[in-house]
Length: 500
Image (tube, rainbow, N blue to C red):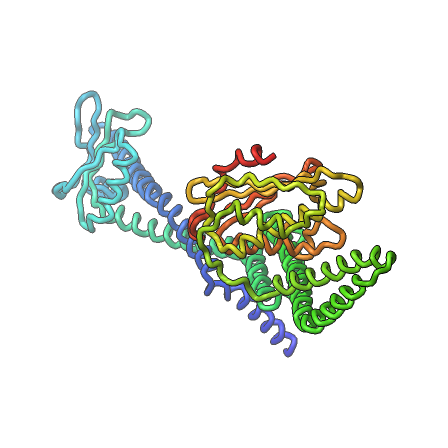
């Protein structure tokens, strides 16, 4: 008994799980639409079938009347007793029978006082639409109507046959037939809709609920590896969606992990910043004193020490600037780009470096930007180029060149900064503008490009790498006069050719 109760409870639970989606929009709509479409199909079949039922009923009545008339014609004098006539008419369920033969119409059978005819129908050559309209007329006419029906007799026994009878039995038969068809259609609709619903529930709805449930759970805690969906082996669209969702969740987790590591690194650098700067300041003071010692060995090694300390200070400053919560909003004003470009060149490298500067900015060209932030953008790009050329100078190269050109195109200014260095390595191009990943040097951090991209976006602009190969590197910066202006850098394509 207990086992039976448990089986019943499991069955009830299974049914509840199947029916529960009815409250949801997708399952409920599927079920309702399936029932409606099946019922619509049944209605489209029902109307012609009722008309065909009426036609068959009338043809059977005509055949019965013709058989009754044959019994009369079998008599030598075509006469029968009143009792036999009544029996023939009663069996045929008609009031009168007339045959049209040899261009003559003859009343074969008839009651003594047949009722008046209310309307007549001719089945000869009747079209489908006409039969459907006549069927509706019969249904809505009510009981007690007397009709005359004309049809063709069987086996060529005349040109036509006419019968007069009460339409009430026909109407009742049609209503009963329609009721049976409706009930049958309803049963078929419910069974079909239930089967379709169950199939769609297991094939589509349940997998979709699994997908949506997994996405909701993953959103609440994307760092939990257990919430990454385990894709099925399905080969259809849902299987593809599961596999793509799994890959996307894994990529998001990897990105979040990387961001968390970077955030932890930024917090750690911020905490040790003060002490680190004090240590570096002390080391710089000591190095200055060491540089004053008049010793050939010290004078030979001191520049390397100075450069190492300067690089450490610069790296610390860049890390702190990038690790801020956000850059201040640009304080825009009209900036003369040519003069600013020369200032960038003076700050990016020393005069002793074997680098030639080429300023191709038209005189008087103004840029609507924050001068300090625009200076930092150009300085980061120019310094990266200068460092690459300086490293090449160690191999004997002395023709390093960095150039900057610009062009106003409507309400945008397009700035190209280029060099004839060795170009960026593939890894740097793949992770361009990503901090700690997009550097082209072994000891680089990639912060310069990341800062330049962030400041450019703050102006509503865009920065992109147009070329980087053995002939050099070309970056393009597009800055609109208004941060809300739609960005369109396509008008300055010819700048690349000019700069190259």
